[in-house]
Length: 277
Ligand SMILES: Nc1ncnc2c1ncn2[C@@H]1O[C@H](COP(=O)(O)OP(=O)(O)O)[C@@H](O)[C@H]1O
Ligand SMILES: [Mg+2]
Image (cartoon, rainbow, N blue to C red; front, side, top):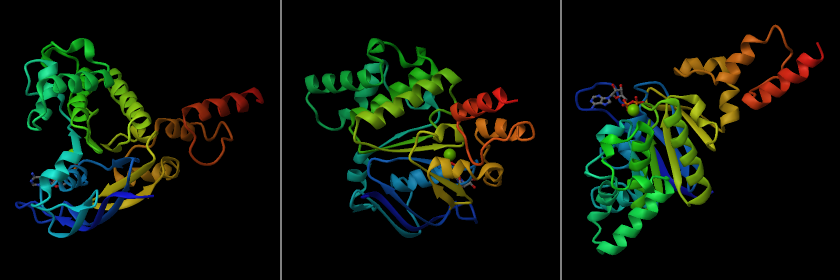
């Protein structure tokens, strides 16, 4: 597997803080994978995203993005390859209409007007918001706002998209539409997706999960292997997946198989076992 991002021995301490927010962290991210970064509040997830995007500068080590080291000289080229979607859907709109907003990221790129219109339409179509083109972004629901924000990022055709808790302020419906969209992007586009979350349930469809604690990588594996950690996930400030919590509560009633079961597998096992009772 080819690396798109290599982080080696990176440390960052905020000026007003004594403790490093990221502490001698190394991590390889593969081209076109969907990587989840999880960890409780303050574990360093957003700081890591800022380091990758060159918004802050590491004190030690190196970060290579798509063959280029993150430094002052390469910063604009690197940023053009990375799209970030943030947490608060209300803090990322600049346009008076949905289409203006999506066009904003393209405006600095010197693209002719008619081509820009096409790109904006295509991006809105990808997130299924083409019917809202002329609407005021502020009139949309949270999930719709995040989809427009994602369209703005997609229009610039990044090879890496970082979603920093982009679903955390959404209701279950909004959350689902954004997650479905990520899943669809994963299938249709050549794109590396880094999704940062503190909700373990959102990681199930990603290929790998990295767990951060105190600015360090403490676990790194595929979702099933991470969920197998079970109760101990709470050591990292994370909740167990819902199906594991249910399985735990049923452990005295039913002889469920060892290890993580997703909701479907859990239901299947409950059916099988209870029909024998
Ligand atoms: N602007 C800042 N100034 C000082 N300390 C900060 C700042 N932003 C984050 N921190 C500290 O850095 C650590 C990591 O924060 P952050 O990367 O935001 O974590 P997460 O995104 O996982 O919640 C925390 O201890 C946090 O208090
Ligand atoms: Mg954060």
